[in-house]
Image (tube, rainbow, N blue to C red; front, side):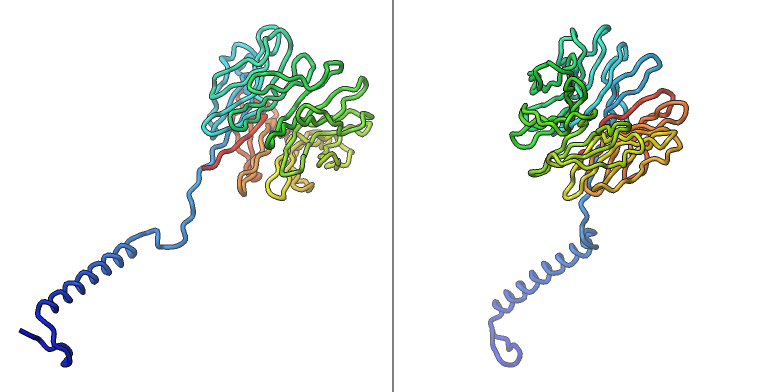
Length: 357
């Protein structure tokens, strides 16, 4: 039996049925697709990735008897010691899921340089001499710690110490940064008369100042082929906050007031430096971005900052502000302050590190 289609062509009944089935299938698929996309909320506009940032802060808080090393994660503080001896956390670094903290604990007669990994402590020195671990940096499976023991600048790699000087003069290693296979340490070495700001690259020291006046490099950061260090140099009467880029110095303050640069961080083409300057009656916490100064506090209360970390568009700074009764542990995110302690006991934030995922 045949049917006439469109008045022009004859087709079999079977072919017409097959054609109708195909049309029905295509219609179902098309309708399903339309329904799916019309019901999908993700089609409302461009998708913005959801990210979370964890903020780690190292420092200490007094327990009423003595200082206790602490780590704060997103504002929640955790003691690293039992509080029976003085201790401080001075640096923090997060690698993968592991949290490393450098600092010291008093053993009853001497301070012992310590490293905590996820809260588990390791002594870097044997406790027979005064020692402190001031900075920690992790690259892959290697853990680098800078500090001092009995007045000698030292670097520990995976717990094995390397002296940075011959021990003739007093010295200290304040900061460590690793770039590829190169290890950079900043600090100072006394020349017998004055402290000389220095950078050690793979154990070889280079003077940043000529030794005429006291100077110290408190922090080092490497970005590409550029090596940045910050600290201070005395001008004969006052400490002047300074930055060195590849050994070339630049003053961040004019030398009228005491000022010290404490930390440096490089993000893209921007160089961030934290520190503080005496305003006459109070020290004011400050940040310099590409050499341009921004006060973090208003000078009503004593305040100092010791660490800066940049994550995307967010700038984090850590330190303290005095409420006239006690030192309150504080961080500032994009200039907005966040108190980590309630002021019942004094404390200081010494380092900050963030992880975004």
